[in-house]
Length: 323
Image 1 (tube, rainbow, N blue to C red):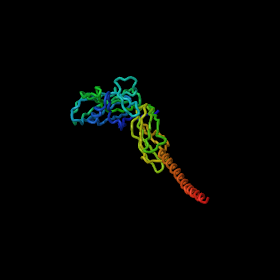
Image 2: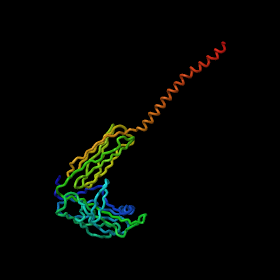
Image 3: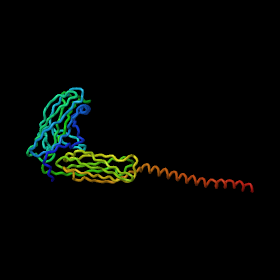
Image 4: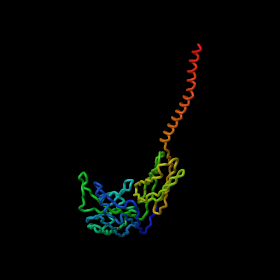
C-alpha cells in the first residue's frame, strides 16, 4: 500500500489519447469532424484530496468553413482493451468504482462556434469527502447538433469529441504492475524483428511506465524508448517495437528495463533470447551444393571410364585379324 502526495498537482499524463472520438455507427464523418475541430487541452489531470475542489478551462477551435453548434456534457469512461481505447459509459452506470462524471460541472452547456473561432469551456471539479482513493475518470464531451449523417446502411452517425479527465484522489492505494508478455518469434528468417510487450496494471489508479527495450547481438546494439502511454486500472496495454533491418543473423538478446509508480521507482523488467537465421535459403544452398558435388563426381567417373572402354574396343578387331 502506498500513500499518495496530498498537494495539488496538474500534469498531462496522457500522450496518446489526444482526442476522443466515440461512434455508435460509422467512422468517416467522425474522422472528418476530428480533422476540423481542435481540442487545445484534450487531457486534463488533477491530484486532489477528498473534499477538495478546483476549476479550470479548456478550449475548442473550429477549423472548418462552416459554423458548428455543440452541446456539452460530462460522462464516465473506462478502458477495457489492450490498445487503451476509451469507452463512454451511459449516465448513472452502476458499479463503476472509477466514476467521476458527477463531480464535474461545465459551462456553457451549449454553444455555436463560427469558422476559425475558439470557444473557452470552464469546468468546476469537486471531489466528494467520501471519495475512494485512487483513480477516477470522466470525459468532457462535445456533441455536434444538427450534424447527423447517414452511413452506407442508412444508420445515423452519432459523433462525440471530448477531453479526458484523469483524477487521482489522495489516500491509501495499491500500486502494482507486471510484465505479462515480452514476446517475439524465437526463430526468424530475416529482420526486422517485432517485439511485443504487454504490461498489466493491477493498481487502483492509472500508471504510465517509462523505460526502454535494448536488443543486442553480434555487431548489433539498438535501444528504443517505450511509448509513454497511460494504462487504465485493471487493464493491460500493448507496446510494439521494431528492431534491426532485413539482414540480421545470429543470436540476439532483448531486455526491457522500465519503471512505474507515483515516484517512478517500481521496476518492470523482462528479457528473452531469439535467433535470426535464413534457414530456408540455407537448406536450398546446401541441397544445390550437394547436387553440384554429386554431379561433379559423376562427371569424373564418366571421364575415367571413357578411355578404358574405347581401348578395349580397338583391341578386339586386332585379335580378329590375326586369326
